Image 1 (cartoon, rainbow, N blue to C red):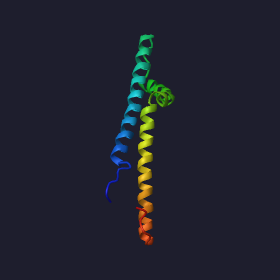
Image 2: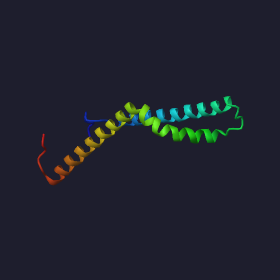
Image 3: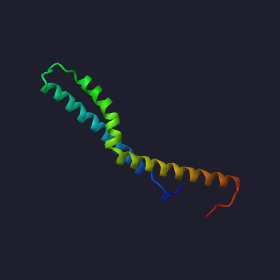
Image 4: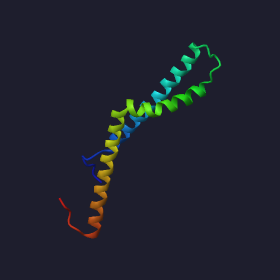
Length: 103
């Protein structure tokens, strides 16, 4: 099938990957910050896994707020691809029924 201008899966994939990587970077940065703050406070036996768990819990709401533009762009890309697929499916069903195209 020919690619239409409505939305590309490549653009959607890129937007989702960028958003996912940004979330991972946020968790990594928070993990490092928590771990090194604990070191500065004199807690030298602070496990890295505990810092990571705290970072994940903190990053969930923080990522929604900080990464809102990336999330909105990824969501819009997904919606465009879904709409294009829905339109293609409806056109295919119409052709299979023998209906004339709406174009």
